Amino acid sequence: MGYVAWLILGAVAGWIASMLMGKNSEMGAFANIIVGIVGAFIGGFIFNLIGASGVTGFNIWSVIVAVIGSCVLLYIVNKLRGNVSTKE
Image 1 (cartoon, one colour):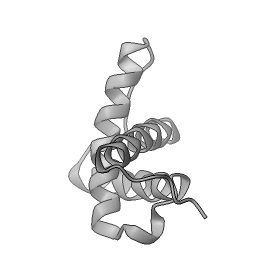
Image 2: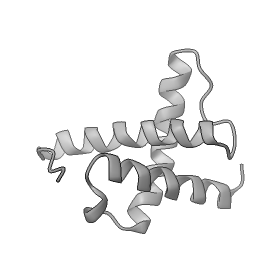
Image 3: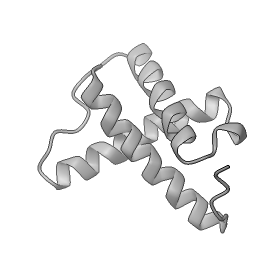
């Protein structure tokens, strides 16, 4: 996957994850991209541990893996910060 595809995948996955975790109002476009890209690595690692394929290219499976990894990342960051879920 090229750099542009990683940016688009990261932006989409980070945006979906921030909406699912109730953090959309706190995050901007740059934060969504970073969370999505790091989440894709985390999701790929988790899915490889359980025997499934991780990010396989620019497709819906990769978006699902990246969203799950991004949600895990946002959950960990919230716990480290001591924030309580403020989903409204």
